[in-house]
Amino acid sequence: MSTPPLAGRRVIELGSMLAAPFATHILSQLGAEVIKIEPPIGDPTRALVRGGPSGTFIAYSHGKKSMCLDLSRPEGREALYQLLMNSDALVHNLAPKAARKLGVSRVDCERVNPKLIYCHIRGYAAGPQADDLASNPVAEASTGVMEANRVNGRPSRLGPSYHDQFAGAYAVIGILASLLRDQQTATAEDRHVEVGLYETGLHVASRDLVAVQLKQHLLGRPEREPHGEFAMPGYGAYLTRDERWLYLLMLTDGHWAKFCEAMRLPYGGDPRYATLKMRKKAREQVEDMVRNAIAAHDLDAVQATLKSHGVGCTEVLPLERVLEAEQAHQPGKLRTVEFRGMGFDVPEFPRAGADSDGIGTIAPAELGEHTREILQSLGLGAEKIDALLESGGVQAHKPGSFAWAAVRETA
Image (cartoon, rainbow, N blue to C red):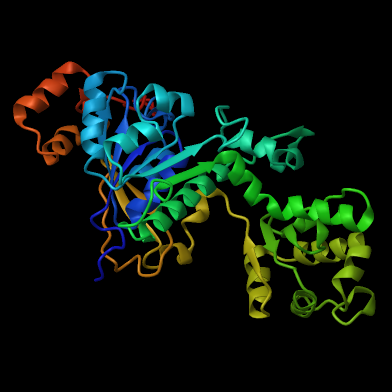
């Protein structure tokens, strides 16, 4: 069993919702000790489902310790600063104005610990909108994603908060890059990691943004590429005879030939459909061929046939069936997490050796569950700890907080 790459590193999270908690979740799964700092009202994800913790909280906050601090009080800040003096990194996604108000700006934290890696995930990085608020949907709206994703003609968010999670992953990359530097010569700038949701959105959309410019150069006018699955006939979801959806991977001429062979269609060698360019010109005919071929079979049978001929395909699964797949239950794919007497199969951060590297976890913590333990680890005496707890700036767990409302009627 090897030593986890971030073993012995302490990371402080001042995060809410998703971006910062997702980043520290990854760091935790790489072996770091993560301490989640929350205000007395808790991270909003603690109360998203019938007044209690949500799937977001359980999935991305297991493995972390919880400390409850009221940073509007001097005692809360004092406790945080004591903690930062004994930590390697701080990750937060507070709004810039809130960070300054609560005393956790970059300047504040560098004053406390000059060697601290300071990671700020914010709406916008440096620029005229640096203090503007942004969220995942705002990033989608401002970087071209939302305009192309319409529901009944209205621009709509994608659903999952991918930009938050991309930003969290980019933050991890920045922190790891900082840790790789020679710490004897590293500067304050080397320890500063800043990720904007807006800038994350730009980077994720760069392929499409460059493609528009390419058409401007070639055609003299901006013109967007069609969505991938609509640009390539046979690449998309098709309904089977037993009314299940099968998603086909039809990217190349080789894929098309294999599909025709598997489905015993006479078009594999037909020169009218030999190349992708030709199939695009005959889009409607090709789509009809594929649609009718799939509709003539039940999903399990056609999927087996296609896979035996090397055609990429998969069933379009509803969430409640995703973890039924044998692939999902191979070693290192899922971890059982216990929370309030319930067991959850939580997907692991994907890495080689996840089933044998010895990186453990703890149940998602109740708010302030580890407050006293963490204060003791800082070398504070019982009298000092009691004084901090009595001040209200530092709080321990209160039993019964964030309970779920009843979900079943009793007989």
